[in-house]
Length: 326
Image (cartoon, rainbow, N blue to C red):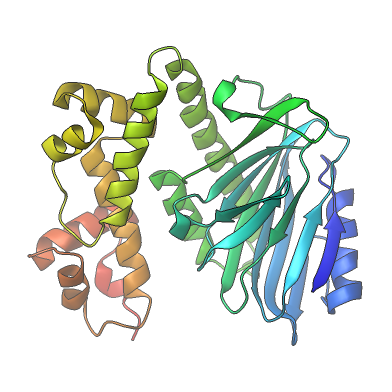
């Protein structure tokens, strides 16, 4: 197995060292300081890095690996957090403290946040498109309390921030839009900076809200809400199950369930379900496995084409037929 080692830092030197290793070990090419590309027997695709604002930078990895590779990240000296967003076509593995975590939106756990004091290894899947974004954020910039549930012990016994979670629906839409763009577009750098800021803003909105909720919601209620969230994600091919059914699953009154779900997931259960369903619809339309839009909306348990089209247009600003791949 090929191994590449690197650290994260607030300045771009870390990416230069990372890129140099890939050039030396796997035959990557570096057209400029931001772009890294591979088209060989080991991998095909690109990596892109840019500074966004002081204290925030972003790196994209977009490869299909043909051989096994392990990317080891060692502890860095800078006070920063790494927000890993995984939108790969299949699940990848993250190794942390001798534990393995599956990560990817298909595992419903596509988000990972790590303190720079943690070390980890990233093992991408072979033969599928690996698409991940890393937001490298200074602790000075991301200075709100996320809450005690995200604290874990490092190898030295010090409590530091580490947790994994699902990617919220709006961030998925943002990532999906970026995934469909090419790094060779002249405006990609500016576009990526804007997306990085939007994703960081969504992250702050979501987890600052979660921190406040620790004083208003029990562990059991959080687990119950997460269970119903997973149930919705696992049943996107079916019709919306209804609030009474979800509330009963959570062991809550309808009023309480609706209120806590919206606080925790920043949306109503129905809107969350529709948004996730439209993301899936987009993937199905572009898969090449369906001959027409009607087959897609029937597969997703929609009875009327017009209703499906209107929901799709609300999410993506275009009709489903425009995304149908034949």
